Length: 138
Image (cartoon, rainbow, N blue to C red):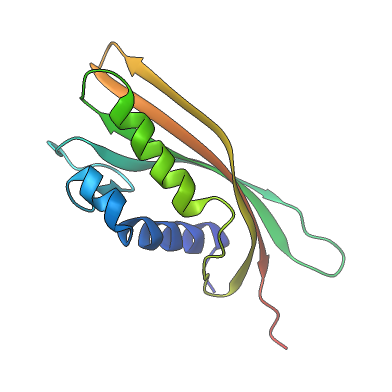
């Protein structure tokens, strides 16, 4: 059985990559764990994932906090905010299939859009909270 965090990332990648409006706005399925060199803007990367055990005496589960990063070179924040909104609509409160695990809930916890002067890009963050349980083998 694979880790719940890895399964969740695969499901999120699949969900975002199959969203026609998001792919069109990105100019392709530019969603990466780590962006390749010289990738065209805009694109999305997976950021930090923090995993917390919330197992009980009868159930095994995790709480995951993870961040998706949106990167844009457009002037102004509009493109970044529009992409962030498509990501939120696609993932907030949805049921994603996970191999060996059950996604109890997935919710946006925090969003932020800012300009990074050092990189001359607009940088959006969409932070999520997910709760997963291991599927029972019964």
